[in-house]
Length: 103
Image (cartoon, rainbow, N blue to C red; front, side, top):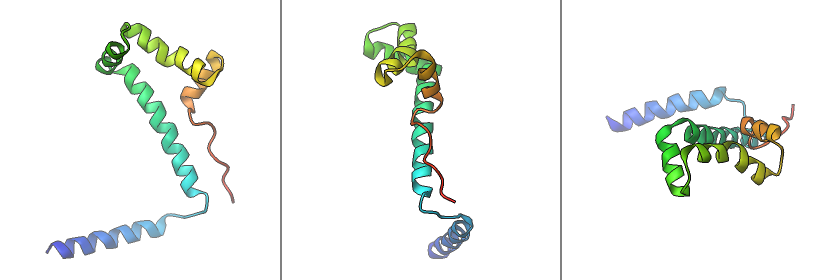
């Protein structure tokens, strides 16, 4: 019974993967999108959830507001060495532009 379910599941996966177009640049595009989303979501999650913000502020020994400020503004400027506008743009696209797609 279990082998039959695994066989059916594998058939469904094979049908799914046949529909996906694979190109030489697919992996790098997927990786850059994943890194961008991961960094942006982590920063947003820490700033947006009060419990994560308080955890980080206790670890840093600072107030919650100071920790949020550092995560949004100062950390981005010091890490990237850029202005506030570029730091905010880096929050939108933290891993930089995605690699160029080959046609």
